[in-house]
Structure formats: structure tokens, C-alpha cells
Length: 118
Image 1 (spheres, rainbow, N blue to C red):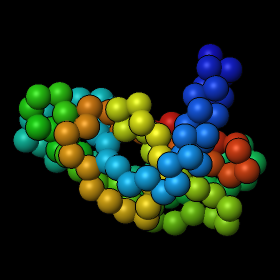
Image 2: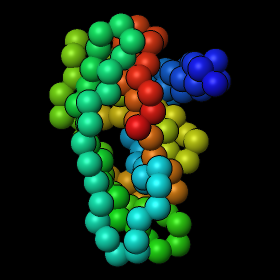
Image 3: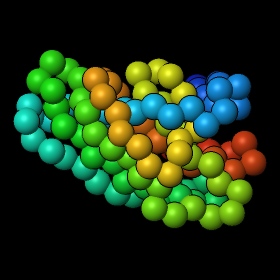
Image 4: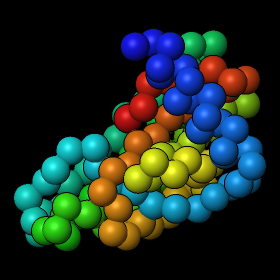
């Protein structure tokens, strides 16, 4: 399982480097009631001591997709935050909106070592 996670992160980082600061949006990893705004914040920790405090919101469109926002509140030196929206990875800007996305995950990375997806 850990090997699969590391492979997924390696692929995401390679794609993020290739797409350079891709701005996209995402939805939650789990379903919410249609019409209900949901969200939360957390701190993502990298294995080598980096971290990022991030937030996301989502609003169910009622068809399995979501609209919402993400925000990077703070991060330590050398950390980038990557997002994975419907399987498409990219480095996230400090904040942004998203529309019609089924899944959205975030991870903090420093020197090629990444946190778990959130």
C-alpha cells in the first residue's frame, strides 16, 4: 500500500513539474448532501519536517460533482502544495475556485517527500 502511495505521489510531482502551477479545482473525497456547503482545514505534514495549513470547501451540485474553493493558509519554507482533481495533478496557487469536480485531494511536498492525501 505504501509503495502504491509513493508511486502516486511521484507521478503527481512529475506531472506538477511538467504543468507548472496548474490552477484547477476539486471536490471532496466523500459525498455531501445536495445544496449543503461543507468544508474544513487541516495541517499536512511531510516526512522531512515540512508542513502546510490548508482549507477547502465544497458544495454538492446534486449530480456527483462539486463546486468549492481551496486555500493555502501557510506553509513552511520549501513546501509546495499539490492538488489532485479527478485524477489530474498540479501545483496549487495560494487559493482558487473549482467547478464540477467529483474528487479533490491535497498534499504537501518538500524535496520530493509528500504528506498523505487529504
